[in-house]
Length: 188
Image (cartoon, rainbow, N blue to C red; front, side, top):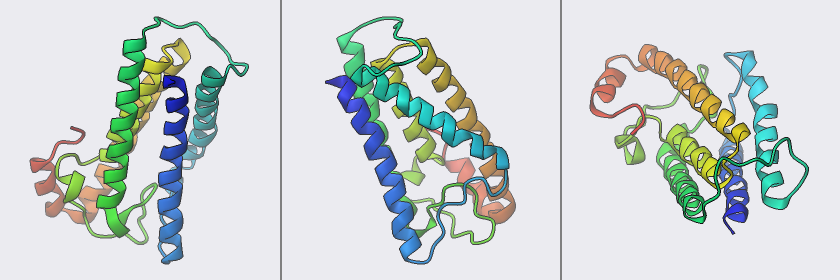
């Protein structure tokens, strides 16, 4: 059951982001700005799709690189499901809080207002917190070395992207962003 819920998490996560971007595009807002600043960002999608395949493979016994698990615990797997659910709820709240300012990547051409309300009153980067919770949940459901490496690499990439975004936001919003940073933690 936990394995199927992990797959459902991927579907819901991708569905929320793609649906939000599509709805914004209908309103004339280009939300997908991924890779405009750093072309190496285009290496991330194929790696992410392979990760998603690994989750599907583990859940449905498709061919995979490794089936070896560090441990097997129903309780820990259910904890993983709880992390996935918390991550999905964090992601949904983030998308709602973002309003028309939602972007995938840094949009230097059409920046919107600085969002400091909703979930952004508790975390400056709730979407990355959501993704981190989901990835940690996946690892707890499928505790193998490949997902552990992916999780650690993703945490590093999330932090790298956050630092890039903070540099842009500091330059664009100046003192308003600095004051926000003093009140709200980077993650949680």
